[in-house]
Length: 520
Image (cartoon, rainbow, N blue to C red):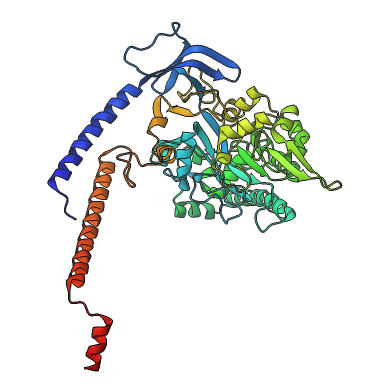
């Protein structure tokens, strides 16, 4: 289809305007001042009529109006009607992937970054609900899964989204689909037993002067130079293989290298437990193989029954909704409800709350982090504890306590501007700021306008991007195509109308006339 000169001119103007707009935004985003009637810096700490200054993505000042010097050239947003709140932190999720699980039982060589879809609707949804940091992990339908990644829900590429790459491994103490509890436990133990045997064999091969592993590493194109590729004695608090310093780390298979780092206590582990009976197995496995101190338990179902065991281990947990466990009492037949978060809080367990439910749900609200925290409050969890479970605690679990989870000097400028009390169903996220840049503005949320107003706002045709000449070009192409379709429909309708008129204006014969003709 030929593009008209006027359309080409319009696109060039849009492109130039967008370039100027984005350059101005980039400059302004270096310094941002957020003003709010209330600034909740962390659970239990609040500043009335507060100011937050963000420079180069980091918070430089937090305090009350009149006590904080504001840069004269900073962009100012907010106002006394808003509540400033730390961005929510999602401790673990499998949303936003092309698929949450793999068919391979033991796959620590896989990297979740290869499965993340930056334009998946889940990230838009996270942003809309104020989640600024999330830990993306493989699902629990595995034995040993791939390596996870901590991301921010903005960016057109995985690299732009990245906060912490090559992160923890996902393990499952609960049976993978098609396995029993016994075969799952055996598969986990065997994975580490076979790792030990392979490492011992490689050490022996080196002592015998064999170079098979080096040839294989060269064939696969692995890095054999540099400090990381050099041989090192095995570390850690679990079992050890003597003489491992003889084997260059670059010659280790990718699968073995990741598991070795886990055993040496150099990599975090998230262990999925769908039932109380799995908790002890998970802790024993971690202790035997030296990574207990790097283990976080991901708990669902009736795992609250093992709360004493979790508390004794000293390990943190991530609670998977539903947070109100319902079961039938076997003798009386009555339904018994247990508030899961409240039970763990009373046992002294440090825990984060996740939004990804452990069961299928058609209700979008069931996948909203603040909503799950609000439900926990309704089920008896203290308010400050619930806020911590979606801000400071998950930040600590992810090893990012110095960057996210609270509004303090030196931390990332991840701030929410709310129009009411945090965790209230009547409150909406009006603005989301990620590292000093406005990432979300509710007044410009096209999907919400469609939903709440029942109409399509101007300039938001399907296929058009929010910004940029490319998006404008797609919108123009869409409009041109629609105009052509409408013109074709009008032409066809006109031709049909003329044909109908011609037929109606021709000679008419009654049934009697027709019968007379036949007789004639």
